Image 1 (cartoon, rainbow, N blue to C red):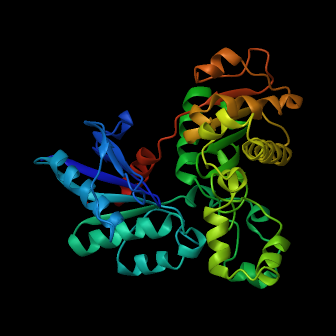
Image 2 (image 1 turned 90 degrees about the vertical axis):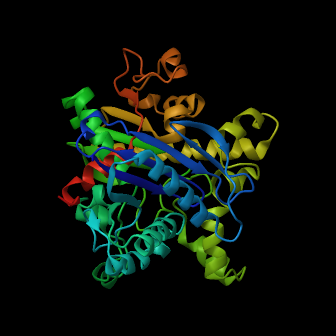
Length: 392
């Protein structure tokens, strides 16, 4: 009987999953993987490495629970006679208490619930999956791996918020996110580019959520997301960094409640909020010539990324390498082109043909900065980090 571990990466409307052999992680390839998408929509889909995408029938009362059950049933089929020794969860926020992977029990679960307000798009759903399994199979080992862990050694000056010092003492600080993605980048970049990657590197994790991480010695020294996953770059539906005076105005003058304000900032801003059409650049690019709001949304999206790359370059004291990853970063040729075009003052030049085919290196031979495209692998990273906590 072979041992297996299941990875669950739970978002608000999708769940990615992967089944690994913990004794063969060096291959970085899952035995089986896939995702459920559009859980909150009228047409959710299920696809896996052994099936084509297809409609998933789930109930309206508890769609997330039904989606998890569907994954669980398929995982059991994949196991056959093998033993599932642990389920490993990507959990966005570990707060100030959890800075390394941890086995989850009821006390840990209770602690993690207290961080839901800091990551409401992700934290509740990972915890729903954990709680469901705790009830169904209390003997099954569950391990949480945190997106905040990679940034745990950020310099103190990067962690602090300019609030009264008592806030720092209460644990209000900048945490940083997308840590599993950045930690994977730190491994793959070292393997492929050696000392160059260990110099002054910025990784751009651009997906529906987006952030940048400045690395030196392949360690996080600054990042754009902070106390919550709202901070930093403009995103698909999230605002990114915002003048706090705007929030005071919305609450005091327009009488928005904290719940209404939270919903707006997480779900109604960013590309969707400005364009009024979509949170996805793929849908905005074809219409921007005839739609001024779509044009404005894309222009601001690029401007915020360029501005923050400039700021992180200043923190690093220069830039040797720029890395694009995640859904937009890995696949959107036009967005990469526009961002790099605005960074030419750094001596960065793009090879348009290589960019067009999503080559691993997309900078030109005479570019002072190496620009690469890397596929992230959060599920493998979670599996790798969890191995020390697996039962014997």
